[in-house]
Image 1 (cartoon, chains in turn purple, orange):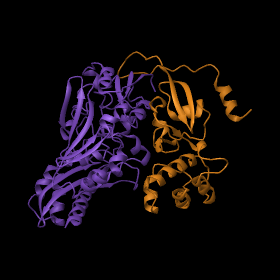
Image 2: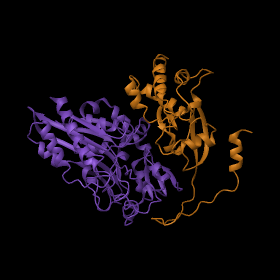
Image 3: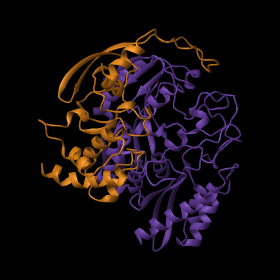
Length: 337
Length: 189
């Protein structure tokens, strides 16, 4: 790990002061990093994928950004709420089961106690070529250097939203549940506070070194999930190589508003198969106004993967992803009928 | 002389210089190491240590405080061998900067009270819940938290909520049995 200066922020202002005025090129390998749970940052600093000059510990801001609030309008999650806190929260489990389930099935109990919700959204890919700096070809780590995964071992890689620049998979689970429910994130930065649609926060694979539309120095402070008749009728289904403590090969976040056996509205996002948290709008449209039968669920899943671009070792994800979505849809329909 | 002291002496020779990395994507000046004074409470004892800002809680426990019961497995948050409690919650000490620790820490050395083992420690012995023993301190700390969290009501829950602690000897069934043995004693006591 490279040496860095460590400072503790005890207020939003002191955190932003510590950040200074970072520049656009800084976004590739920021010289200053915020530290919350540290489960990602310390890992990547040890690997020297990240090597900031300065680390700003924002855990002192927990009193400001560490609360879970439920109102008629929806759910508000502070960015410094830990994954386990939200996963175990009775209100979240009852009214937003897809969120609680996506968190409970992620990582391990220890990591969930540490990792913040804000940091979780900014997880970096588990692509081996990204994480191992001895590899030359990684456009995400070193722009223009190529992508060794295109023709290398790519069983874990993405089939949706990929480009010739990068086929890495977004590894998280929580973001999928939020994208399905149309969540927004609140941020504070050198230029003030703003609110951003979470789905739009994640950039496409054309310029893989830039993963989000966060501005330099911007800090996520909270997540707002709008209420809807579908949030209670929701679930997260995660398929992986082992049943616990493993990243998804394919996952589906599903929320349904059903009336008299027909789908009034379906909210669907996919994980494990895509470059970024993937809202499956094509699948949602197929289901709208239809009864949720096996045949309709299968048609929706086919629509979700119509644009899939598999590589040599990950073609199985096209089939697995569809079956995962079908099962998740039928499961949610079954629990609500 | 103990093995550990021998290692200390032999490793204290001339420091190995760090080779400059080749072909760096982002050339920049190397930051000088930052020293920090950190106040910690470990197993009820107040401790003050001067550390490099990079020091993890794991390395500080082992190398500065002599508490070598906490083990370093992968050092990347994948194996759970370094699990300790901070403020009663189980965390990975390898991914925790010691400078960022704000609450009291408990390690395997802090569980025994006046010569009496913690119920989970005793259960690990009774159930033969280890072979090589390297993952055991992390397993025990994790198990205590698992029971206190209320995630040990069923065998299935134990399996799920203990999945962050790997055991390469695969003593898992015995570990689960130990947790089942200790749980009523902990809830009673």
